[in-house]
Length: 80
Image (cartoon, rainbow, N blue to C red; front, side):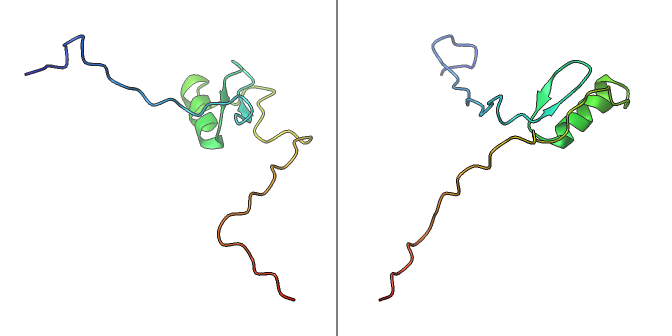
């Protein structure tokens, strides 16, 4: 029987979808970036004793372009 300590057994790890473009919430104190406001909030609460550092960015940049809407589902009928 194989055990978990057997070096021939490989455990696959799932790759994370971490793109720097999606991380819009940046801590002003240590420049760590997060995908969501709750993640940034917990970081500030735990690492900075709840005091928000100056220059903390909590929203998307103003010059960001909206992504193109991808149509899904059944195509619409063309009426003549």
